[in-house]
Length: 330
Image 1 (cartoon, rainbow, N blue to C red):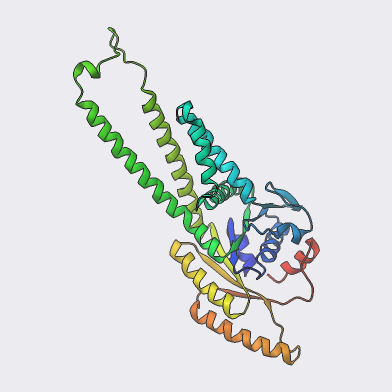
Image 2 (cartoon, rainbow, N blue to C red; image 1 turned 45 degrees about the vertical axis):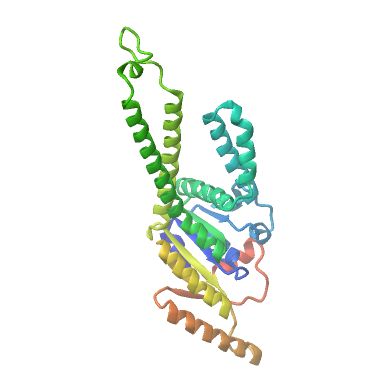
């Protein structure tokens, strides 16, 4: 069932409570898709990266070959934030008077620790990876951070698009007010700088700056709007929630499903990982009965979301061979 999502979609997000096996499921899913000839990229957005440990090799912030048709990448939140702030700082210095360069640097240093800076930087990186991934790959699988962080991240494109739209509207009102004030000037003041031939003076640097700021905001809004279109298009993108058959992961899954659907994100699957086997002794039978109770609550709360169960394995899943074996369960 889960593999069918990888065949039918271009972008998949896997999320859920920490420690339930999201990285294993994401990697196995991407590997299975690559074995079917799809060019796949698996991306970790979790600051506590396990992708490299799982594959037994170093994976950085640039695509690393993991297998035929498969690449992996771990978003480095600190490096991503540094690049994001450096880009913003360069833009501000270009638009502001040179005498304020020191103030821009101070502002950027303070912004590094400001609420939302990290999320905004990671969102920019995810936007880049979705755009590049859909050009260069057939499938991009995101292994995300624990539920609360991921829910906020998935809501950010809508929030930041609305914020940018509001900022643009305020700028337009300000520009209209400025134009009205200039219209009150005398004819001599309005025509100041005109030559006898009737040509106008060079454009006001402030007007050019304002136009560039508007252009930057429009590009940012359009990129975020495009990302939101991908995230909310069930034909292109879907979200699979990975969980254990335990009380807290089940409750967290129900809450995450509610937040994702409110954001407009399609939840295509629930993946119950490490399911206790049946017929393996009294201890495991009692545990399996407990798991059945929790899964009954999950089915009652989310009856229409497809549910897949993956049995508890005897060994750790580490390396390509183990992942390929795990992928057969999908």
